[in-house]
Image: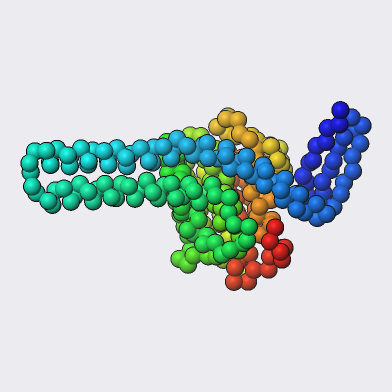
Length: 281
């Protein structure tokens, strides 16, 4: 029986035959389309896993407004059945219903933007909007885990050329990665700034940091070592790094064991962008 395993690494794609223990390395650009499809498959699987982690928070964020809607409607019915004719009270109830439904719509829209397959073409993406809407999905999770989120975003929003749901997934991956490093609670700070034709998005956590012996492996596919002791898939950082590379971007990080980590997403500024690949993939 022949079994082939593809190991993605910066030097190429190595195909190892388990039966013969022999392998060879090829230029990854020869299989550029297949490589993207390969990561697209795992990106989809990782996205599904992320959706599963968000499920309880989403249910909570929708349940609470629906509870308010139900109470408001019950109060409206009691008012009408009691023969009261004060329209202002009924209007107040209906305004409450309208506002709570808006909250439910906002939650579902954010989730749909994250889960959408996305356009095949790169389009201008508003970075700050993508950040704030994606982090809003983590509101319940941050409260449950006693994690404070602080946004230090530049006054001006930035644009990058990308698929919007890819950028949102990178933000989600890095935010959840920080959460996993703070099982006892803590603080996640997000900063944005421009410098020399590039856009920087920094995620700073007050977690446990990454042990030095693991720091060279954190971007390896399927590698996972979580401080909260839960079993992860180990694809979040790997896929984020790969997606960013297609937009001419990268991830930088520093970490002090016992003190926390800082991950920085670097992307070409849309105003000066020279993409690493001229054609859309």
